[in-house]
Image (cartoon, rainbow, N blue to C red; front, top):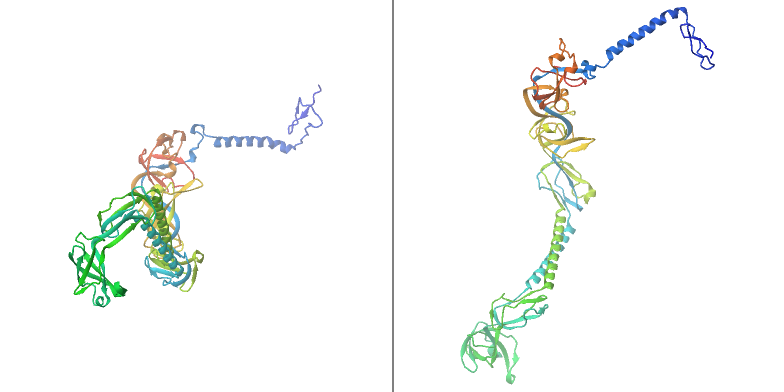
Length: 541
């Protein structure tokens, strides 16, 4: 194979073993004699620069790849700490109320004015309630009717005597089914008997109720005292065509009188014109007031009963169902009545809080259309202002009720206000992986602050005097601190060998924005090291 010689660029020497071809031919580079002289010097200078750069920038293998210059040094010192938390929010009234209408009608009264102080329960608006009043009356009538029906049905379970007397006859027995109007028993009062006798019309005109009478029993001729109870006002045609008037006498029954006993009587010196038969003073046939099954009959014929004495008891599933239905009707009527009463109350609007009227939009004579009318008025309780400040989850442990708060407002430059933490909610809000918790701050001496102003707040937390501290950046992984022993330091106190740094576990205490308390693990004067992030407190500060 034919060997081809070509010259190396810049030297003029030929390089054997390179076959010259059409496309791979290396063009000859002609250099001037002057350039040939400084080119080797330039190459040497470039190589020296690269070597120096590698020396200064090479990783420190002994320090795990971290240069001493990347660390900041500080000394464990005693400081006074105050744990404060900064935040912002909008000042608001401690309580506010927007007056809305729930009903439609004309405003009859609206005594409030902007700037007025109103007490809780004081009248704000009175709206015409004509239809609502009628609705309540109708509901009350329906309730009375439902209650009456239930009471009658419930009372109908016990069939009782209306007056005292003797049971003449019992018409039912246990197990019988009865309906309203079915006879249960007959009771008659025979302790007093009445006797109706005819008197000559002219004689009867001289008689009067209350006069004493002498009653003579037919057959035995026994006489009993009696009293005129009534004298008829109309004449009747008696025996033989004579005009007579019925006169009713009242006679106490000594025990032997019956309705078959007949008698005559003399009132004063006036004798009757005929005889008559005794009747019981009162007689009643007691009937069922409702449908049901007879479950008990506690009386028998001949027994004496008092007014209200049970004669029979009704029950059964049908009566039970009727009672349940009647009770439901009463409850429904009660609910309807309550709704009507509530609706009527909505026409009178009173202040739910004590406060100052800051807005009035409706006056007497205007018409309102429920919630479509919008706000009628606004009331603020300005006895105290409040601020809700969202606290980061990392700081929430520093906040507790009773802590003092310093507030400033851009609208009031140069002024500072004081508040106090009222409560801290545990109902946090998480956004993009960060959780905040609302802290409520009360401001009693608020001066020129007004609801709606934006303020900055600093919550003054716990304080600690003369405690060991290190910069917050010096603590890593929760409770780790790098300590620089003497052998890691140079004579001038700078870090010479990062590989000799010692990692210690410490116990942490109070902290502020720059420093954190060390309760154990370090001693005063210890030198600590931490990576320089370009932020935080100055070393040794």
